[in-house]
Every structure is written in structure tokens, then in C-alpha cells.
Amino acid sequence: MRYIEDFKEGEQIICHYLCRKRDTFKTKSGKNYLSLVLADKTGEISAKVWSLNNDIQSFESGDFIKIDAAVEIYNEMPQLNIKKIRKSKEGEYLPADYIPTTESDVDEIYKAICAYADSMKNEHLKQLLINIFVHNDEVKKAFLHTSAARTNHHAYLGGLCEHSLNVAQICEFLAPRYKYVNRDLLIAAALLHDIGKIYELSPFPENEYTDQGELLGHIVMGSQLVAEEIAKIEGFSRETRDTLLHCLLSHHGKREYGSPIVPKLIEAFILNKADETDAHIKMFEEHLSALPQGSVWTGYVRNLDAHIRKSNL
Image (cartoon, rainbow, N blue to C red; front, side):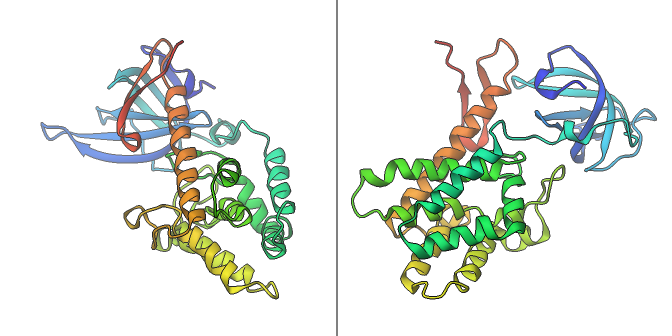
């Protein structure tokens, strides 16, 4: 297996990869060509098929394919120029090679999340977190094995729980440094803010938006899940319910970013900034990790609105 992260310019690649995306476009001269996104557990790479001939056999997005291609550099990033393609046969590849996975220990992440639940002084928030992350086996399993995004950041097995813990840890750091912050509300919101992604994204290796995800989105579905669990807890106050749900509904910060409401609580504002911080730093990390050996500058990164550079001090 030749992993994508190890590709070098000029190298000839003959191996199996997951085709995440397949589009047909036309050149300026009107000739059809294919634009693909191929993936393995180490990342994704753009690929082009300029000549559609008998060496390019039938395949679709979601198929495992065997390719014969050359590694080229385009806009300072590696890209494949593919000459041959066929669908992979069962037994020719190991599915585990195509499922990107967190480098962190998921068991340790889960222990840290449970410790946060136990640390709640608010008994109703504690019970809510325990009910969701400990007693609900279906949610627990999905939470530990779902990605945090389809492509932008933490887009790997275990990415959701890793991102959620990171956000909670950033919030824990910030909470005692400012007045009027309810620590329990903020930490509970941090752990739950992306819980709806267990319904928004399909399992690996697809990791694509589900019908529910496209129609409702993780903010709505996560808020619905939390509201349903709150309704099962006797004595859970309306104030606590509404402030927690507000944090979840506003965590993207702006309506144009998908939040139906903007942050109106200091806890909601901190959550939005902590979420944004972890996501953007992870984008830096992932783009810098994908740089070819010897390079320090990436191509333009749309989500960061910049070319970014690795510091070699």
C-alpha cells in the first residue's frame, strides 16, 4: 500500500484508492475529462483523467479503484495524472487502509469526557451528560466513531469526540478568567455542541452527508436530541434547558454560517470562539502536514482565506 501522505513528485503510483468524488468537466477545447478526489486513511488527493479511453473502465463515486498514475505538483500541491483505472476486486484491498483515524486514544478521550460529566456541580446537567454519553449505547458508539466534518477539520474516525473534548478543554481554560461565566453550562454545551453530527454524517468510508443531514443539519438534530433527553429528567429547569439549547443553536456564531440565532449569552459566545479556534488550528495542522517534503508554503486555503506557511525555526 502506497499512502497518499507519502507521495512524491514524479512518482508512478499503481495501487488501490477510494474514489470519494467523480465529476466530468470539459476542457476549453470541449473535450471531456474526469476530476476525482481519491482517499486513503492518510488523506485525500485531487486527480485528473485527461484521456478517456479503454484504459479508463467504468466506476462511480464510492468505489474502490485501482489506478496507474503519475504524481505532479499543481498550485504547489500534489495531484495525480491518471492513465488507467479499473474497479478494485474484493480481497485486493484492506478497508482499514482507507479509514482515517485519530492519532489520539479514543478510550482516553472517552474517560476525559466522563470525568467532565462527573465534575458537574449542576446535578441536572450531570445527569444529562451521563444519560447521553454513558447510558445511551447507540449515541456513545456513534459519538466515538464519527468524524467532526466531511472534509474541513477532524474528518476522520474519532474526530468528533476529539474535537468535542478539545473545545471543552479550551472552554475550561477560559471559564475562570472572565466574570459571569457559568462553567457547568459552558462545558456541557462544549461536549454537546456537535452531537447532531452522529446523524448528519454517514459512517466511514463514505463519511458523506445523510438525507437527514442535508435536510436538517447537525445543529437542529443535536438540539432535538438534547431536548428529548432533557424531557426525561425530572425537575430539569426551564432556564437551564433554554440557556443550554441557546448555546447549541448559536455555536456557529452567525446566521450565514448556519446558526438560527446568534450568541446572546457569554457562554454561547465563548463556545463559538472555542469551536472556531479548534477547527481553524486543526486546518492549519492538516494542511501543513500535507506539504511535500522540503516545502514550507501551501496553496491557497479557502477556509483560512490565505496561503499558509510552516515555520522552520
